[in-house]
Image (cartoon, rainbow, N blue to C red; front, top):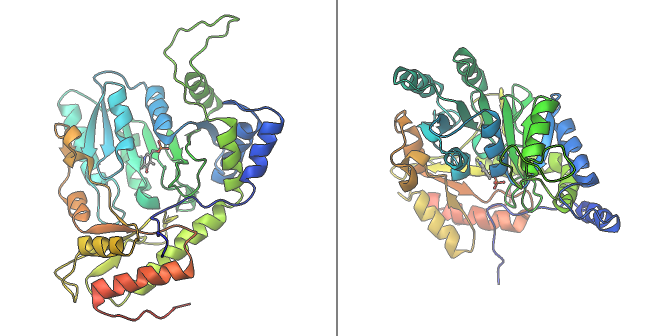
Length: 388
Ligand SMILES: *Cc1c(COP(=O)(O)O)cnc(C)c1O
C-alpha cells in the first residue's frame, strides 16, 4: 500500500535526541534550563538583528503576550490581517479587545497598505485609535514591510509581526519577525521547524524580553513567598521542547532550501499548464521560505475545466494531503460582526487556491505521485517524466 503524502510533516535533523538526553542526564526537565537558553541564543544569532528572544509554549501565547506588552486591554481595537490562521486574531479577543480586519493585496497576499491606512483613519474618525497592528507573512511570503512600517510610524501605532510561518524569510535582506515592535514565531509540528509545539516572542530590548518571561512564568514578584501584583500566565517553553528546537536550528537553513526546492518543483511543473499559477515572490526584495507552496487555479481557463477543489479531491483519492488556503477571518462565523476594510482580494484567493504538499522531507517517488495527479487533473497529460 502507498503511504500517505502529508502537507507538511516534522523533519528532524538528528541531534534533537542528543539535547533531550542531556536534559534528562542533568534532570533539567522543567520550563527552564540550558536548552531554553541555548535555543533562544540560536534564534537570536539566526535572526541577526540584535534581538532578544523569549521561548514560549506556543506562537499563540507569544502573540497574547505581545498584545499585553502593547497595553491592549478591554474595549480596545486591534488591526489584523484578515487572510490568516485564526490564532493571529484570537489573542485580541482573549484580552476583550475587538479585531478590525484588513484585506490582502494581490502581490504578497498579505495586508493591503491602502486598506490599512483607510481603516486607521476611519477608526480614528469614529473616536477610537487602534492600539496595535498585526501583520502576517503568509505561507512564508514577506508582507510589503516598507509601506506598512511607514503607515504604522505615521500614526504611531505599534506593529506586531506574526512570523509563525516565515522563519527564514527575508524582506530586503532582513529577517521576517525583526521589523515590528514585536515578532512572533511558531514551532508547531507543521511549521518549517518544530519543537513538537512551541513559539517565541522576538523583542528589541532586554526589558521587553524580561517582561515576557515574567508574565509567562505566572508573574511572581520578587519575594520569598508567592506574591503577585499582576495576572500571570504559564507560557514558558519546556527544556525538553527547547532541546528539539536546538537540534532543529542546526538544520534550519537546509529546511528552507528544501521547502524552496518544493516551490521550484511546482513552478517548473506548472510552467506550461494553462490557467494555473504557483504563488511566488513579486520581485527580489522578497525572499520566502515557501513554508507552503500554493497553487491558484482558474477553472474556466484550464484545458480540463477542473478547479482547485477537483485537484484536492483527486489528491485525496491517492492519499495525498492538500488543503484550501486560510479562510479569511472576516468571513468566519465567529468574527462576522467585526469591522472589515478592503475589497474581495482575500475572498477571491480563498475561492481558487490550494496548499500543496510542501515538506522538505518529500521523496522523489512522492513528488512523482503528486505530479501525476496534477498533470492528469489540470492538463490531461498522463505521463510525468522526472525533471531533475
Ligand atoms: C501556526 C500559526 C500561529 C500559531 O502558532 P502556534 O504555535 O500553533 O500557537 C499563528 N499565526 C499563524 C499565521 C500561524 O500559521
